[in-house]
Length: 360
Image 1 (cartoon, one colour):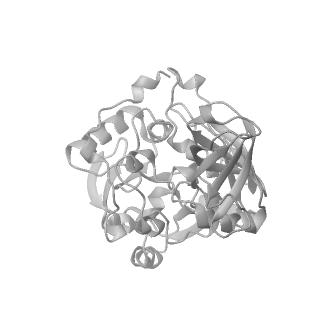
Image 2: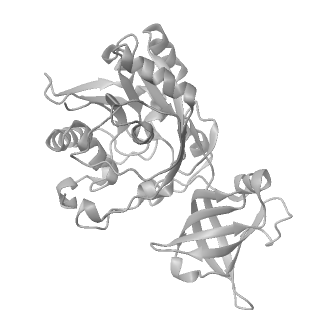
Image 3: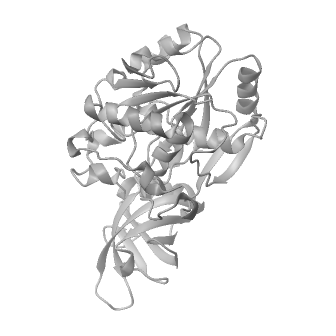
């Protein structure tokens, strides 16, 4: 499909720079393709009223790490040069793939020092070598530390990698370490938050428990590739960056039981949906699954396992707007976004929520 079909005009002041407080006070646009009404303005705390006893929410329990690293490049005896790197996928205990800015300053064999002194033995310091350089500014870094020692060093020198549309307007601060993390995050490895989950609180969980709604957890480590623009003119020419995920056998069995008894699988966020769909067979049966997924969902995709989707509002011409258009219908989502803009919904990672029913 033509990428420009997924374009729309978004005013600058529609972009949320801070989340709603409390988290569950955000607005929620309910979208029912073919329903009456198709669009309904509600709040996040109204979620239980749209679910039935026996439905199951699927959450992504990945935890955001401070993956934004500022460093200096050393090449032989040449003067050091500043570079900025965003880690996006771990490929070995001592290796990460990262996006570099500006990428032209790096080549294989370069040394990069993060923190002070360039001494990896000092707390607050970290060194790496550029092992490979790929397309679109991607490099592979081999760090001097490995495993838990590397994790600790990244926690010390890194910053929360706020999305570009927020980072271009303000610097990250101490609040973001809490705000840009779900309350149920536990598996470290993401460089971007599964943002639909940012709206959940203990109060909302208590309401869902009382309504008999199950909750299950999968893990997809969201990469910085989620923020990359689609540069192709046609969706067939776009290549997704892969992300590492995991669905265990117990969770798969419980979700299959939900489907078998007529309950609905409600994915909290596009990351949960992409992982569940990656783990599902043609007949909708969900299997234990682990690995890298680059699933790219556009209109025409036949959904196998997910019945409903909770998700924030996404960028024009983004792979995520393509995904929601596949789920609820392109024209329906264009109308929904026009309504959201006209009525003051807050967009993107810290913004409001939409609850989408799947188009038959």
